[in-house]
Image (cartoon, rainbow over the protein chains, first blue to last red):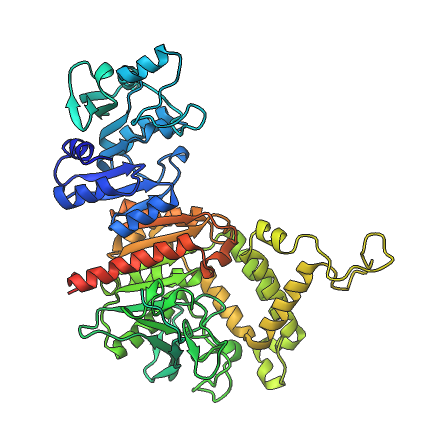
Length: 192
Length: 390
């Protein structure tokens, strides 16, 4: 996560929030929220190396498989549930979205926007995109759910989520004009 | 990290308590001793103490070796020592042998001060809570009011957990490894098989075998064999032993002896060896007592089974670790504790280590496991240095 991206996401989290970060990676965002915004909470992560990195950082981390659900978390037990670059790795992406809304008062989701113009260009040329944002070949990508900014709007509506803010992120900068075309990352903030 | 060429020398000590200790059962023990060892140095404000609680077959000899005995490493020597995950260059580590054990603290093989006879089965039933109370008294005498951390695996993890419930203001961190908030029916069942093996051994003599100059070794062997099976995983047993035979009989097409009594498979040989070894040093009454303590432990019991309600008392920060192939204290049991801590908004980290070794993994050197514990204790040390403890 670049500093710009981290700051853009952190800006969406209110001061003092109780935060659950699903797929928290090495815990850098949670550590930032703890230090700069007086947040508390937990990260969930599956990867051993990342779990260790979180412990080193002093971030509460729970080694759980998100595809097995969020049953250990009580309803509405967090102010903010983050899914930053997590959704695209989940088999049950829709279930996890609903679970996010159950567990958190607010959800913040960010994922690679497949409709970003360089990706469209690549598809037009007949090839799956391989970019800085989507650096994998089609046959070995961990991104098993590829979707677009617009796709998420549809999914959010289908699940009755109230999107309170949405924008694109490109080079760490907020993109409000044509985000589905102009941004490599889609960001949504919603309430259940 | 400092490289230490010489092994740390451990010195067993004993502390005597005259005052009776009130046990959960209503009984008392008086004039008892606790065997213990310490490693590292207690700092000036006495804030760097770490208590290590032991499981069924272990003792106060947690780390280091005894002077002049090269192969006498403590049972958790890979975890605790200078430069190790629980670094005795930073922490003052205490190992205590529990009451009723057979490694130095007062137990069933000692003399009952009221009768002048050996306790035997008259040694009162002790619980995890009783052990923790006794450990707390020892810490009082050592002048330690608050632990930087309490650490334990399996039954030791239950004691660590119990510390956070019985003495919430005396524990800053609890590290609970391969443990559970209580035993399942299956687990109690295994304990019962072990106990029946012991008490039905004709050499048991109702627990007063000491006077008869015998030891119920047959029962102890079987108890240990059953236990050992449950500490391993199917995979690791297959990998280690498979269907290998100890000796292949020449002239037999299958290699079998076609006997029902002989040791033929390697796994049989291994279990018998483990059983024999164990029966030579472990006390039968201690085995009964410790398995019972395991059975009884259930902090949620007085809260109608509501673990979250029970954990409301906790104030410590937690690190929980489980191992994927541990079916005796499965990850699901650790997740129950995680959930109860989440319900109380406690600080908790949880590592679920994908290790093949079953329950035994908590004593082995898995790099991921060791690293997580090392980093967690490094954090505790950083807090100490930063003065958070004070």
